[in-house]
Structure formats: C-alpha cells, structure tokens
Image 1 (cartoon, one colour):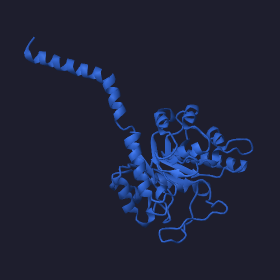
Image 2 (cartoon, rainbow, N blue to C red):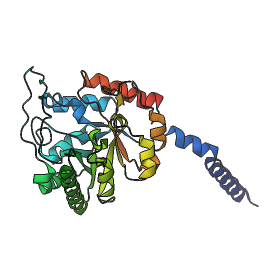
Image 3 (cartoon, helix red, strand yellow):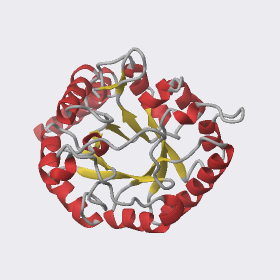
Image 4 (tube, helix red, strand yellow):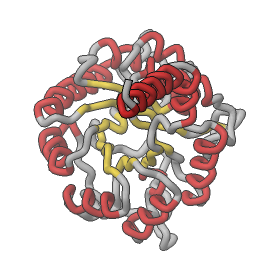
Length: 310
C-alpha cells in the first residue's frame, strides 16, 4: 500500500470515528448547548413609549440580543407610523427579523370603568381608530403579506357570551383561510378570559375544536393560561403541534401582577422542555404595562439566556 493511499484510509477512518462519536454523547452535548430558538419580543411591552422614538427604542432592544420582533398597536397608526415595507426595512437594518404582527378580532372597547393610561407627556393617550378582522380582514391580511411576515395573530376577540364566541370562531376561520392564500400562518392569542366557562362551555376549548387546526394555530400566552388555571404542558399533550408561538412572561404569587420572566412563580423549565410537542417555532417576551420596559426585558433575557439557557 503506497503512502498516499494509507494516509487517505487513515483520514477516512478518523472521520468515521468522529462521526460515530458525534452521533452519541458528543452530538447530544452539542445539541444541548446550542440555542434552540432565537429570543423574540412583543413590542406591546413598549406600548406608549416606542412611538416617541421608534428607531431608538428598537436599537436598544437589538443591543440586548432580541432577534424576533412581533409588532402590535401604535398611537401613530399603521406600523408605528410606517408602511409595512418601511417597518420591515428598519427592523432588518438593526439585525432583527419582523416575524409576527398583532391585530384585533373585533372593534376595540375599553372594559367598563377603565380608561387609557397616560402617555409620556402625562396626558391620557389618544389612539387612532384601530382596524379589526371582523370589519377589515382582507386589508389587514394584505398589509401583513406586504410586510413579508410569517405570522398574523389575533390579539384578542370577544368571548364573553355564546354569540360572541360564535362570531369570533367565524372570524378566525375566515381569516385563517385568507392568510393561507397569501402564505401566512394565522394564529390566536389568549388572555385568561377564554378559560372561564360561558354557558357551561370553556371558550378556549371551543376555539380549539371549532377552528381549522391547520389554518388557525395558537399563540399561547403562558402567563395568562396559568392565571386561567391551565397547565401549558398538558395543553401541548392534548393538542400537539397547535402552538407554534408563545408569549413568555411571569406572574406574582397571587397571579395578579405580571413580572419579568424568571422573577415570579411560573416554572418555565418543563414548559420549554415540551417545546417540540407544542410545535413551538418562535417565542416572544412580553410584559404588559411595565414601569420600566427596558429594565423588564433586560431582566427577562438574562434569565432566558443565563438560567434557562434557551
């Protein structure tokens, strides 16, 4: 056997042994240490703040390591005062992806006895009329397509009565079909109200069973689900693959106050361990109405990267 052939066989043997090693413990180690998902942020966390300086706010968010953006409502209207392609260009220029957008299922109504919070100027917020899926479905779907996003999400829709539930289901199914035609996955985002029985039936159960499972996925807000008395891991087992999106935030011991991720009572380790059965593709940190949004998301991403090691 000549020298060159012997060296080739030795090298091939080493490569084969290396491959065998990686197929065992070494491969397992690599898969456990590599991040499984990029960390996203729902921009509702900065509601009332981001409109004062959209680029500056997004720049600070990017600097913390957030990569996936899910947009929400804006006092400026549209996408923080921009057209879909303009907002996408801004997000991309900062090294982030615009992955998802929230829209209303029906016309927005403040709960009885509540009012909008004050803005940065100390005056009550003034929000322009917000379009909704019931009345403006095709326009909202077309805008999402123009932005090139992967997901369009119904942020909430009325479920307080049987009639409202029926109407919501109809809207969700119609939007799911329209979104599919333009290559977007549609999803529904919960609060805790969907887990409280109406006329003996749980609205969320009806939303799951009476919407098309392919066209209407779920963005599970983990904290709101826990507040509603649900165990996310059990939900994943019952409806595998239905939850490609998550909202990640924490709750205090009384399950009343929202906290940064890792500073409350929710045990996130078994939830993230069940990500595959959930079908989770993206998750977004969110904190509704924090006193200091930047401090909150800084704390959350430190926990996710340091303790949870997602």
